[in-house]
Amino acid sequence: MARPIEVELRQDWAATRDRPGPLRRALLGLGRFCRRKPLGALGAIIILGLLVMAGFAEWIAPYAYDEQIPGARLKPPGREFVFGTDNVSRDIFSRIVYGARVSVTVGFVTVLFGNLAAAALGITSGYFRGRYDIVVQRLVDAWQSFPYLIIILSLLAVLGPGLLNVILALSILVAAAASRVIRGATLSVVEHPYIEAARAMGAGHLRVIVRHVLPNVTATIVVVATIGLGGVILAESALSFLGFGVPPPHPSWGSMLSGSGRTYMYSAPWIAIWPGVAISLVVFGFNMLGDALRDVLDPRLRGS
Image (cartoon, rainbow, N blue to C red; front, side):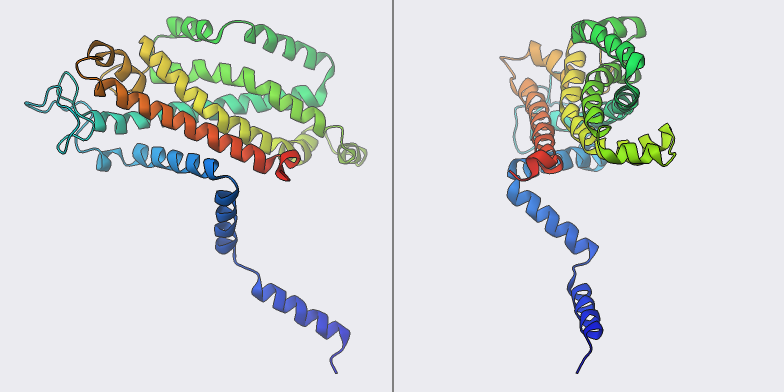
């Protein structure tokens, strides 16, 4: 007769043997996410398509973004040109594919820099509080009191148009808006007993922030960054539409709407329709994915 300790060891070994591996657990979690959040899964598919277009534009696009095709001026969508051509005989599908690279670069780099600055401001402001918190929040309030478009246009009027300047201007706005949300999450975290326990054990401020505060606000940072990506891409398109974005001949969805898109709106509407559809799909995808991640990562909404 087996002893109790041997029975427990056998049961533990059987449970370990039947436990799925990391890849299978990831696939099961992905399938569960798709069943519970179908719109979030649809948004993830749209974003994946955007990343594929940006990364493999040279292989996906049949033409270069600035290649003028002889005898193909203002061709409507068809078998030869899927999205048609513009007024200077350029393939619109190829320009939209290359324009995804601009949107991905501006969106992800801006959100990365902006949320790094927002995390630094929000976490330190919510952790230290006191006079430092008052000064930082009053500066953020003053910055947010101005209309966003006026701030961006003023910065770009000083810096000039260009990809790097657009990223810098948008990063400042993202940092100001996201720091308030991250500060609120930090204020709720620092009230927990384990923060006091870490301080009582002699942990310094940096260790408490890195080991205890930052991991507990990471979910908030991820959700804010995901939702903010759609807004940043929309803002970049608006700046390109106004002529302050990426300079030509590099394609940008906003500039495609502004130039020939407005001029030939009635005679060749496909020039403006397809860039508008691309912008709408990408913003929709990021918003749906951000909402789904918020529901999954927020413990207050996880049960619903």
